[in-house]
Amino acid sequence: MTGSTLVTISSMFGTCIMNPGTHGRLEWAEMPVPTPRPGQVMVRIHCAGVNRADLLQRRGLYPPPEGESEIPGLECAGEIVASEGPVGSWREGDRVMALLAGGGYAEYAAIDHRLLLRVPDGMSYEEAAAVPEAFLTGYLNLVALGRVQAGESVLVHSGASGIGTASIQVAKHLKASVVTTVGSPTKASFCLRLGADEAFNYRTDDWAQCLGENRIDAVLDTVGAAYLAANIRVLRPGGRLLLIGLLGGSHAEMDMGSVLAKNLIVRGSTLRNKTTEDKARLISSFTEDLLPEFSRGTVRPVVHAVFPISHVEEAHRCMERNKNMGKIVLSIRRSDAG
Image (cartoon, rainbow, N blue to C red; front, side, top):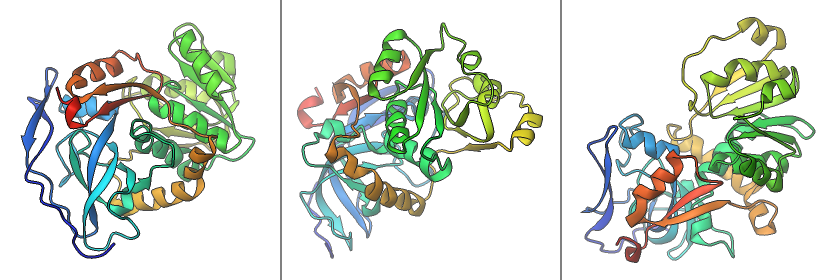
């Protein structure tokens, strides 16, 4: 698709964060439609995924990168309605899912065409909105950074979360064995059905004691400080600690002697603040390697619940209370605005 095929859309509705902070609230309000830049497409959003980053942004703790939309939402699914300049092979009417730095909780978004993924045949928009952030985070850490190999062992913390359910499947795609930690017996059973080989309830099990020293090749950690010592203990020589969250705090003492003796790699990453070029390379690799598995049915998005955008507050409370097993998704069709 080349040249401009912009349609006239005078305004849209999107979600504003009012008074960011502990009591920040979300308001569905009319606002200007973003103007696509060269190389971008306009997507009419049907659904958007909910992520913990949205909760942090609402509290004023995780602002979007400079120049990105202030509207929350790091992933969406919808259809292309217009474009500006060369956008590769994408066409109006294509069903797409996209990785965003912001802007998902809205009716429209202008998105770099390199950040799009095609929605597989038979997949709903609700399911598609559960793919980009969760699966690309798992893929980035386990494949690109962690270099997990067949036969290795992976420990996935928060296994029933959106990223957890995706990462369990990414690890199994790599033919690794998977151990996970969760917060209830129900979630443990759920993760085992999804493909995990072992699941520990961190509320009742001493998972590090159960695993023992030198058991795990790669740890995907959403917790941070509270698990640092235990993560280092269970890692084998040459192991990789991949830090993607700080639910258990950001400051902890580290046994650097063990890190040296075991030749460990400790690596942190966030997807949101990577450059468009880095994200595009990741998406290209994911599209070739893992996206076909969705059509084959060997990998699937896990959707816990779909809330209309008018119930976004309820969706956020569901995540805050750790009620979900899989992704929480918002339906953003005009009829869902209430």
